[in-house]
Amino acid sequence: MGERDLTGRAVADGILAEVAAEVQALGEAHWPPKLVSITVGDESAVDVYVRNQRRTAESVGIAFETRRLPERITQEELRAAIAALNVDPQVSGIILQRPVPKHISIKAMQTTIHPLKDVEGMNPASIGNIVYNELELAPCTALAAVEMLKRTGLQLQGLEAVVIGHSEIVGKPIAFLLLSEGATVTVCHHMTRSLAVHSRRADAVFVAVGKPKLVTGDMIKPGAAVIDIGINEVIDDEGKSRVVGDVDYDSVAPVAGWITPVPGGVGPVTVAVLMRNTVVATRRQKAHYEARLGASTF
Ligand SMILES: NC(=O)C1=CN([C@@H]2O[C@H](COP(=O)(O)OP(=O)(O)OC[C@H]3O[C@@H](n4cnc5c(N)ncnc54)[C@H](OP(=O)(O)O)[C@@H]3O)[C@@H](O)[C@H]2O)C=CC1
Ligand SMILES: Nc1nc(=O)c2c([nH]1)NC[C@@H]1CN(c3ccc(C(=O)N[C@@H](CCC(=O)O)C(=O)O)cc3)C=[N+]21
Image (cartoon, rainbow, N blue to C red; front, side, top):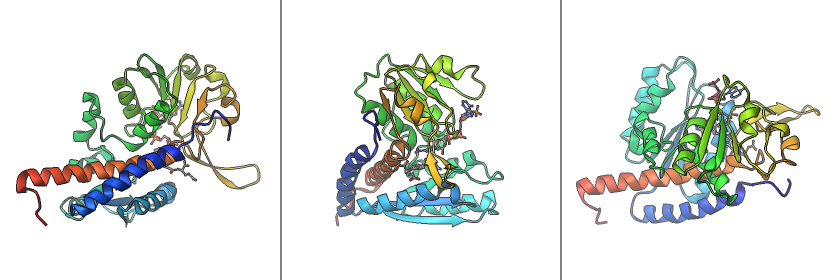
């Protein structure tokens, strides 16, 4: 770890301290938050993420349950499983882990998650909020990545930002969040002619692609902030499995002003934001039902 490292643990702990206080208050008001994670088929790709979710949820007092559904489940069966969670009054949040098998439409399934329980803000009805600058509940990784940039102290208004990767869950939401903060945003993807031409101009570079060493030191303006979102499992020279990002840390760290390491950067903050989103969702459900039925008088 170097002095330019922008690490995530302290950022995550700050978020989690606030979340724990809110979880306690919601529990006392008879609205204890509960998060349900759904995985479909091969779990190996999300195993670490789900384990971190459970550990973190338990550390702040959020109940956590995993539903593991078989690879061969039909879309209608998955829809029914989500619908059952939508109407379960004990469940405050639902997260459908990606990827899902090819025969299932992720968009159709995100649409099935009720907007009040949609802790990633990925229902098409929810994701539009970030276009309207309503940022309280947005996709966790995007919020976490932008939070890391804010920790540099850089002024976001007028900042030249480049986002590499344009998935609906990471790259695109990051671009919208940055626009809301007043940055000038360029979004790159696999058809972009020269990544380096764009990235070298940027004060802040976000990388969310899933390719180790995609970004190297010669692609970065000296002093820029580099936010590495990639999580890739690789086998190192000694034959051991390791997690690395999309940024070639060794060549970028000496050039960058700030760099988020992998592991230990955006990842832990993503999990903390998921917990915060679960609290936001629970608070909204409480307000929704109290507005219709009156406050509980336990
Ligand atoms: N730290 C965290 O909290 C999280 C980390 N991740 C990690 O972030 C990475 C990206 O995840 P996700 O967005 O879900 O992945 P997707 O595979 O959905 O998206 C990857 C994006 O990268 C683009 N891309 C592919 N090749 C290139 C290239 N050579 N140059 C520029 N852009 C390219 C693709 O563009 P196109 O569609 O045009 O091909 C696509 O927009 C993964 O490593 C994932 O594990 C994901 C979620 C959370
Ligand atoms: N619906 C959905 N939403 C997601 O946000 C989502 C998803 N599906 N599928 C998988 C990817 C990946 N992802 C991670 C988040 C945090 C860590 C994390 O906590 N990483 C730690 C530990 C890494 C390690 O030690 O291996 C770190 O970076 O320090 C990892 C991976 C969220 N994703």
